[in-house]
Image 1 (cartoon, rainbow, N blue to C red):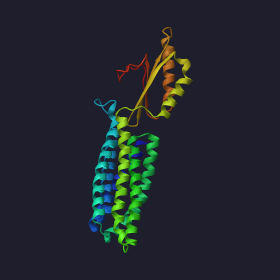
Image 2 (cartoon, one colour; image 1 turned 30 degrees about the vertical axis):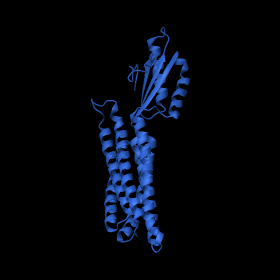
Image 3 (spheres, rainbow, N blue to C red; image 1 turned 30 degrees about the horizontal axis):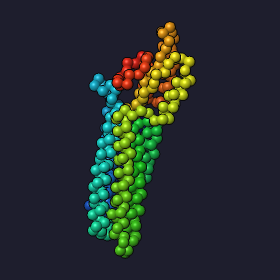
Image 4 (tube, rainbow, N blue to C red; image 1 turned 90 degrees about the vertical axis):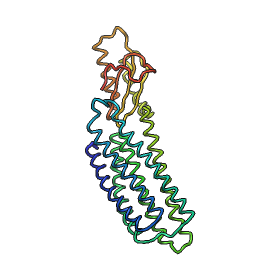
Length: 305
């Protein structure tokens, strides 16, 4: 999926989110319910998150300029981190309101419930489609921003199904005395799902912002490639890696015998770089002559891409 397709998908999600938020607000005003409040807050959060993703994509498309030559990719991680903070805040609001509903329960009913039931069906289909598109983009582009969006749309889809079932049960079992607890309990479940998503988005965003190394699978791919090119260098001092947004940065520290010809060394370095880069879609591979300096994060490159 190209960047244009990613932006188109996110723009569609922005429009759908705006309509969904207005419908959720109308349903909440028509029928006071813990689940409908949770739905409105969750939908508003999702709308803000998608808006941030869209704005981040447009900013990334312009590049970092002179001020952010290397770090502009982390804008994706910062956007995801802000989304995680909003998720945590919404979790608290929904959880507190749900506890109040358990202490002082009341029956759910009115035209707002009917509006919400229809809306959950419609937006369940839309969110399911957006989830699949975001998941495809996250896998093909290796984008943390689209990964957070995929998690967000999955949470929305889960919420649509769960809210529909809880409201339907509240209406169907209205004559049962215990049915008044369905609404607040359902709100707590929604709050729990939002919290779990927030923890996942937060942990992955912080890991990348702190320049965490690549996953073990990626590290193994790099080492296998270096083994295949072992005849091209005389010493392997170490490999360092990190991720910034959807970009991957890899530093390979190698050594050559001093009597090697410069032209041969350059050819070998180019072959090593090309071999490692074929495992990644958007990588900057730097081959450094000499051992790595643990006290520096910006070792001087010999050849980079």
